[in-house]
Amino acid sequence: TAYKTAYLLAHCPAEYLAALLSCQPLGYYPPWVLIGEARRRGIRVLPPNINVSAAGYTVENGAIRIGLKQIKGMEEKTLQELLTARKKQPFASWTDLKERVNLPANLREALVLTGAAQTFSPNRRALLWTEKMDRINPQVPDFTLAEKIALEWETLGFSWSGHPLSLVRAQLSKQGVLPISAVGEKRSEAWIAGLPIRPHRPPTRSGRRVAFFSLEDETGLLDVTVFENVYHRYGQILFSGRLKPLLVRGYYQYRDGSRAFIAREIKVLSLK
Image (tube, rainbow, N blue to C red; front, side, top):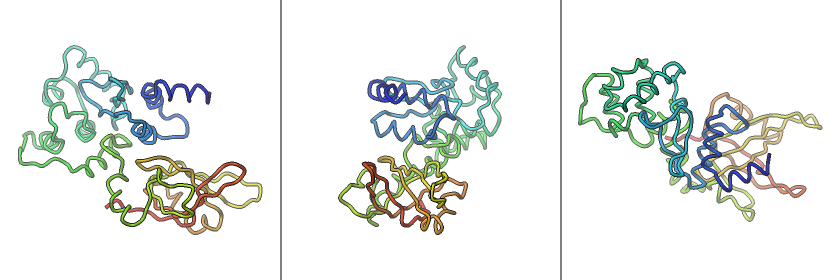
């Protein structure tokens, strides 16, 4: 399995990642990590598109196109109705879509907020205004990049417009926080920031409580170990049940030919 995975990532990474995304939930990594991996490999991630996207993820000219099934509130019956109507004739406008497909109000809003309706208007806020007020106000400014990223997370479970950490990278750099890709062997200790991936507490031979998780930013992934003394102070942050970006201070430890980033301090990072 490891050999096949390595081969597929080396020779057809877009197709392989698109297949993994279409099979979610599956495996250790959630969709937003796979999307980040695609970006780091130079693979473009295209938004869901009401006139182009299939049900699942597809590959277009080497880029990954997000499927309509990923959109929050998209039920199978509605999806099939939409695809059938589109097959007869592409949707010409937002009004045309609403007249030909019975879309619940929450799904219509999600289609706008994910960017799936940008084929009708590049201004998502104006299109949302159209949906709510039944008319377009040309003076309505579009959402900011930060707002688009936040709204895409709410309606897709990730953002195709960008990684949340990229919004505060300049600020983090001024504070001495390193991107994960820059954490090198020569630096004995560093602050890093990212989104935690599946923190878990496996049983240990000693009976001591140790936690493990991965941290991901826009530049890469890093495995983090939290020993008992640090866990007692910061464990509630890791296992709060909500996905929150974290600041972690720690250092690399090398043992038996492997390495791990050992956490000394953990904080919740504000993206404001």
